[in-house]
Length: 51
Image (cartoon, rainbow, N blue to C red; front, side):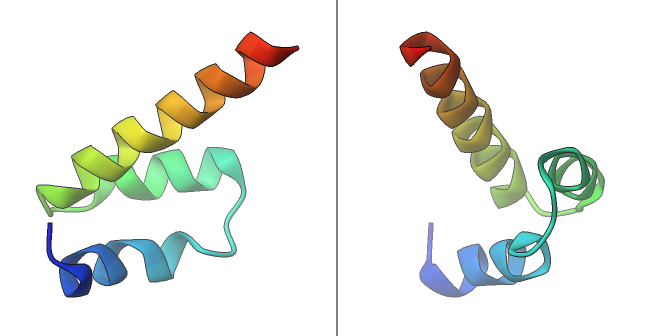
């Protein structure tokens, strides 16, 4: 994934809460948003694994 494509997706969600981020990513029309959504789900799974 190119950095410009990632920035186009990450900038709108940078200051959002977790729930808002998921909604924004699910509604974005870009294919790269699916990859970032999977990354966020993976990060959350790692957080709960360590608790």
